[in-house]
Image (cartoon, rainbow, N blue to C red; front, top):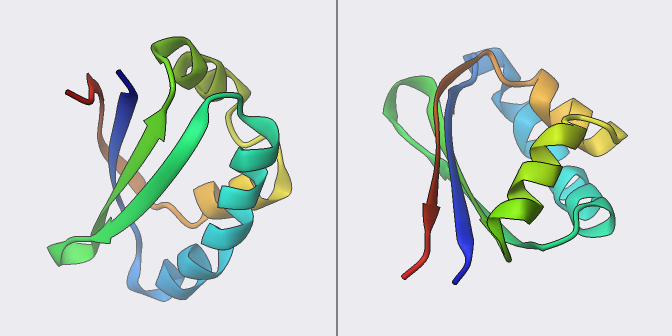
Length: 94
């Protein structure tokens, strides 16, 4: 069973274009550098909030990715566009 990362965050209106422009590079960096990365979906929510749904092969893969943080330019650029974290959860796809 896959591990699902659910991260909800806020983005200022003037940073939305930057967030979206950084997304493809961030996903490419994840694919190149993060073992167990399967896929990701970004959902725009009301009120300047976003939900990032990321699938990992195992909980260990997700934990290792968290340890790396924004270690590559595309990932760092995406993270820099985020104003604040609302919530972060981990679950199992069933």
